[in-house]
Image 1 (cartoon, rainbow, N blue to C red):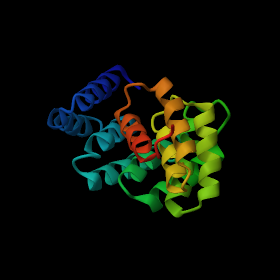
Image 2: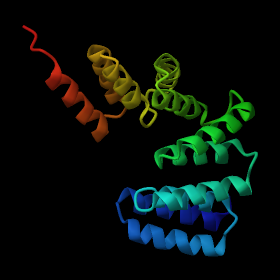
Image 3: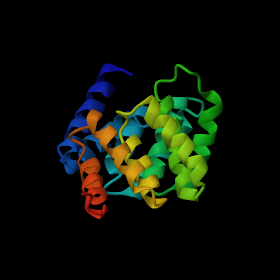
Image 4: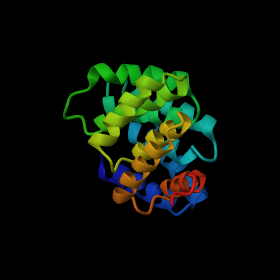
Length: 195
């Protein structure tokens, strides 16, 4: 990635983290005008528009894949963004395309496994989901959402104790994760009092 694009992507991520979405959107629109075929620009723009314009997210993710159809990083990130935008079929298609390109050294391998588990959970294939989500969580307990989604699967399956154990393990690595904190409070408040 060239230096200018790296700076734009980093600036957009910073603005997004501060919830300064309009500034980030303006930055990414300008970047797309200047670099309309750069997959990093397109994927960061897709991530930026996810909260404000999910349809735009899908279109940008598809454009990124068109520019780099055999890049496993681009395919995975597009699949991830499309899942978040509720474009499950397209996400599943890109996930299937990335799997044959994977190597054990692929830096996002645990996230690919996690996304496969989320897809299985979404389809109601709970055993498949559990296998993938447990694998992703065991391999990378710090991963964003890894513990949360596994705990939600256990909770949905009527296994609140297992869910709580996963949340507590995940919070060791992600103590400031608000979603994990909310899930832990919900699980502990739903538990019967133990004497």
